[in-house]
Length: 274
Image 1 (tube, rainbow, N blue to C red):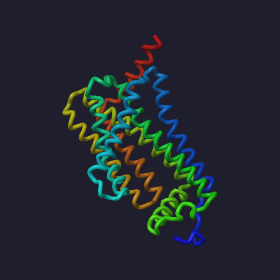
Image 2 (image 1 turned 60 degrees about the horizontal axis):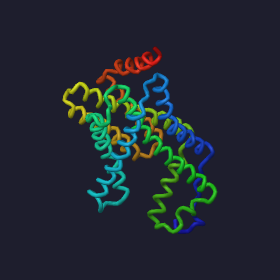
Image 3 (image 1 turned 30 degrees about the vertical axis):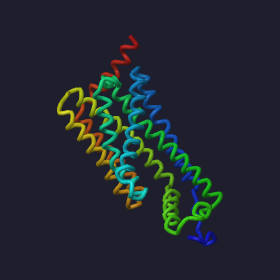
Image 4 (image 1 turned 90 degrees about the vertical axis):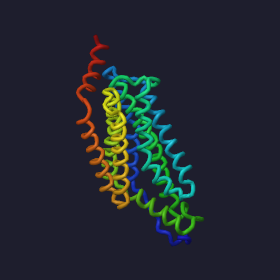
């Protein structure tokens, strides 16, 4: 690894870069289009949407800070894994607190949906920005070669970075299409979790039990997807994420009154039109 002339370059194909571009587009547009659908039915509420953005930002930062403080001596890579495992606890607890207390005024199904759009939306936009940076890395890799990235690194770090860049470069267009479905199911999962917590708080039916259920579902989703990703099979990883998120969404829909949500959104539209 130390000899740049012996390094076999990695290349991001045009199909790979196009796939990442499609991913960025989905990340950016999905929250906007969903909010526009709510606007169409006169059910969009900007305040809970912004609350969702704020709560997601604060909960993930609190998770990262807690992990960095509690596990200060472990390597950064381990801290990242721990943050991914614990983030569901912080996100769902923060979601529950935001909906429980009147200060955020989330007191209707439509507001809870808008909260979920904001919560999931910021995650999408952050990941979209990260994917844009990855596209830039791919273009630099194509023009400057792998040696540009690994020169000066230790053999171990150079090998780790090479392995990571190889995985990124091996993602073809079909995997990117699968990934857009995965993004969509994850987005819908956040809205479903928001509705689960809101409706059970409204019913006041053992609310802490439902909070624990939401945490368990979120953590289980992250754990399963994280475990499967260790096999470094992109098809398996994406399909697992899609199936896992879809299964949890179906489970949640059986626990909440979906019909009431739809009727309330339609009512907003008919009230405004009349």
